[in-house]
Image (cartoon, rainbow, N blue to C red):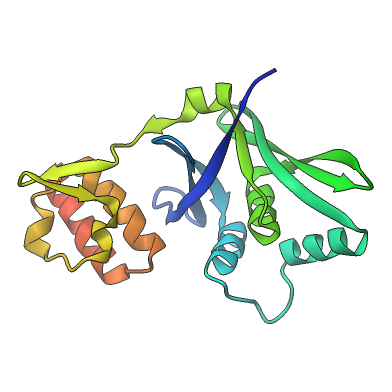
Length: 197
């Protein structure tokens, strides 16, 4: 039996190559591997709304599913990403009803949107993470000073950005978008373009 690795949501990044899609960035909770799942705009908005503790005027589809589970006295215990075929991730919902676990197949985007509403953990089979996971350096060295991912929360000038590596800038761009620091994101994007020339 494959082991399951717990994941955390690192962020949502707009996909500039495919219009109307986002990259849902997931990271292992106790490690430094990260991967992204391409999801549609409605699911991305649904996840972002909940993560930012905002409500839509009327229940979204995922709010409705959670309400139905509650009405039928069922509880979402966990979400498991169990397979990947042709770059498409397959997930399942583990739902507890009357001391019995029922497993339901679901799109990963819907499963994650439901998981954030139910405060339940998200897992991935270790063999899948071994294939898709990319190791991310937790610390970047700039001018001999240790710099963690929290740097995006500090005041950074445009000149400071030139000192970062391309990988560090790309990570910072993801974090800036997640933190809704769009002006900073534009400067980081410009610095990335400059580095790539």
